[in-house]
Length: 150
Image (tube, helix red, strand yellow):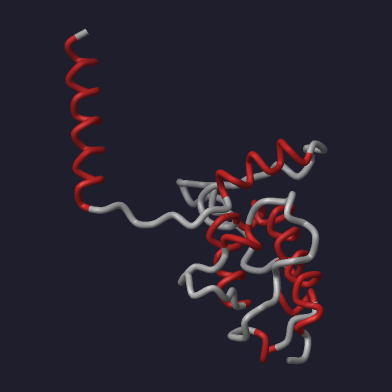
């Protein structure tokens, strides 16, 4: 498959671009006064050498000697089929870094601290079940009633 040997370097650059600049596209203004930009060149997969044919092709991301770096390369397989496509990776990067929370941590020099942050934000969250939602509601209601009692 053409481009497969360059998947990891290109994907790493795309991920790094989202980690460094993704917060610039995050919708952080609840009043709608400031609109984030629609496009940042660094966050475009084509900027990092990906082609149109790469969007649905499985990317070779594992086994490059960077197991000490946690995060998206290992968690972007959203549909859990064992193969991460560029489409999945790009959507997952946008979901983590470009939605409603702006994570900006790339100025931290210690890899352990960066990994600690990545392990908590670069994860695939399963939707809550009905029972889990009811438990959260129950706990919030209890806390509210208790606070009013005090």
